[in-house]
Length: 402
Image 1 (cartoon, rainbow, N blue to C red):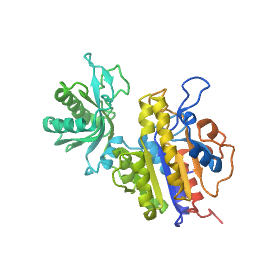
Image 2: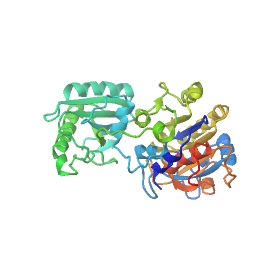
Image 3: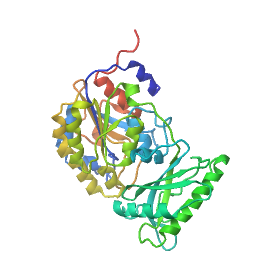
Image 4: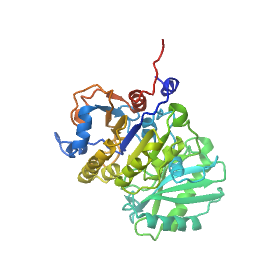
C-alpha cells in the first residue's frame, strides 16, 4: 500500500508523539549464542516500557538491503525510502543551513588518511578534530579552483565529515563515488554513470587531484573521499502530509538536514544526550511530534567498539524517566538501521522497535532486544509503515471506508 494513502485519513488533535532514535541501534553478538549490544546493556527503563508496550522489527528499505542513513530516516518519517532517495550531500547541506541553489552539486566528504602506497589507511582520519577540519576547509577553499566550475565550497560538518559544493556549470549527480568504503585500496576515480555526466565526472576527478595536492603534507587528513552526490530536491512536508507540528532535536548536520527538508523546526544546538533530553522538556508544550536523534550508538558501532556502544545505550536508558515524566501519548524507541560493532558498519539486519501507548495490545516481549522483538505484536514490518502505526495510536487517523 502506497505511503501517500495515509494522508487522506489524517485528522488533527493535541496528542503528542515522541520518536527517540538511537542511530545504528541494531546489533549482533560477539560470539555464537551470545547477546547483541542492546541485549547486553542493562536497560531497566526500556525493558519496562517494552513489557507494557508492543515490540517488533523494522526493515528500513527491504529485507536484505543495507540502508544508508538518509533513506532510513525518510522511512522512519513515513516516506518511501526508494522514491525519496537523495544523495547525502544534499542532507548535509540542508543541515548546515547552506544556501540551497538549483543547479548546485552537493557532496558528502570524508577527510581520510592515505599511506605511502596511496592506499586508504583510515577512512575517517582518526575521527579528525572538528577544529582541524575547519582549518583544512579554509585552506582548500583558498587553493582549489576548477576549470569548468565557477565556484567550489568546502564546509565543515563535524569531526572528519565535510560538505563539498560545486556551483556553476552543467552539473549532474549521476557520477560514481570516489570512496571505496573500505581500507587497503586507493580512492576511486569518479566516472560518469550516464553520457550526460561526463563533464561533471571530469570536474570531480580534477577536484580530487587538487585536494590531494593541497593536503599532501598533512599527517592524517591527506585526502578527501567523495560520495552522496545530489542536486537540489524538494519534499512534501510532515505538516502537509500528517498535520503535525514537528520538532527535531539532533546534533549532527545530516540529521538536521533530513528534518529541515521535511519541514521540521530545529531545536537549538545540543552537544550531549542530556542536552537533547532537556531540549525536549523545554519545547514540549509547543509541538506535537518530536524527533530525538542519538548519534553515539552508531559512532561506537562504526568504531567496532561493542562495550562503548553498550554504554551509550545504557546512558539513554538512564535518561528515560525524564521522558516518562512528560507522559507522551505515543513513545517510539528504535534506530534508523543496524550498526553491529562486530561488522563496524551499517548492516542489513532489521532494527528493533518498541512503541508505548495506552492503546497497545500486550505481547510476549518483556524486554527490549532483538530476540525479544521477534515475539512482539508489531511483527516484522517495513520501516515506512511505523509512522502510520504511531499516528493510529495517537488517534490521528480516521476510519477508512463506510
